[in-house]
Image 1 (cartoon, rainbow, N blue to C red):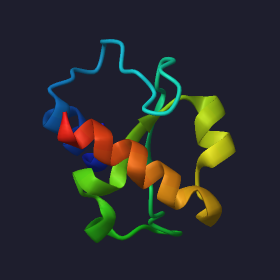
Image 2: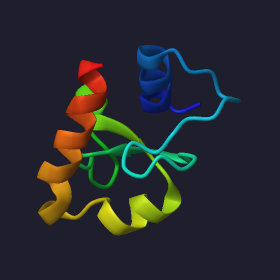
Image 3: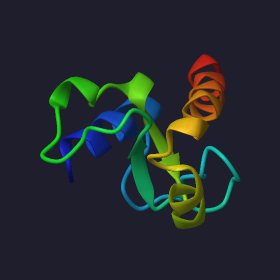
Length: 83
């Protein structure tokens, strides 16, 4: 398991085999997305819960890594963090 996935799972109390909903649409999440992308090679300073969200493949393709959607993703993720 990648370190940033572990950070997300531990924060929300998930284990690897349970249903994790996409934070955008509610379908089954298959990726833990960096809202502010790490870039090629990555930067571990972006591996914090405030920057990680669970997404399904469709939402990841549609919203991920597109600057015009960043504020929308941050708002949705902050709602989950406040629950």
